[in-house]
Image (cartoon, rainbow, N blue to C red; front, side):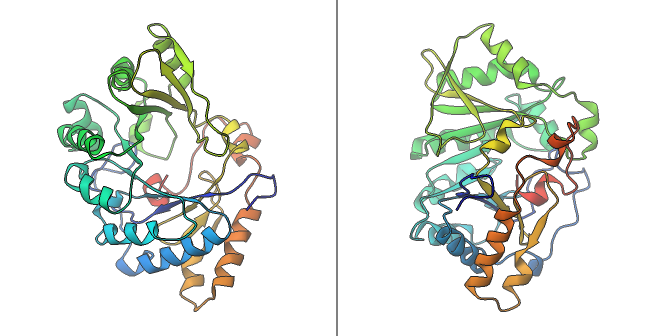
Length: 328
């Protein structure tokens, strides 16, 4: 289904939980957050019903996020159900990787083949600091095991922060040289964390310049239908790829093909817009599939051409709801 600006909307990101087993400094406060109750989040059967209707409207790809999706009970059976839906071409997942070592095989058996791992440092002490307790060894072991089991592509998402991990740019580039992974540098987005006040924004232009000082970057062309938010390159002789996601660039809006469903059942057409449609209330009022279809179409029709922040040329891009509550 196309929106008012002729963008094909075929991708749905679904947060299955607001809970997480880490407390990353740029995402959550140290004391944690007020979590949603059991009845406040969508049940699996409710999510599946939404996906069925969305697929009938043209959604072909679903990505599950959190919080941390791997901590929600019953996820594996839910993944099997999603992967059996006719018309749904791809189900993917984003994880922090802490549980990946023990769950890589069951995830693969559930039908997952593509996976994204969030990883902001390759130094154990620094990783432990940024995540408030995370074990880097577990994540790296999980990534290696996922590769051995046959996951492809494996994408490693790095939020780049000046003064924190910009000294690891070459280290992450080396990961893509030695392994068949796609390492993606993501520009920092402001979501209200105190930690962000202690760091500085670093543009991907500077990241690219640092990598180009040592390596030639060769653009990787992809089909427009499959093109995600990353500009992808390959270093000559490398096994993997390097991607750059410029969170502040307006061009992302021109090709945006996604909707987002929060854990509490809110449908969002834009990450940085507070416009939400309460699908949970519609579902629990005894609605028909036609009602769900109408709600999804309403969200798509309301999708703006560009973000409000870009329209105002606002350099500070903030979102009222934190990232863990939206699902990214």
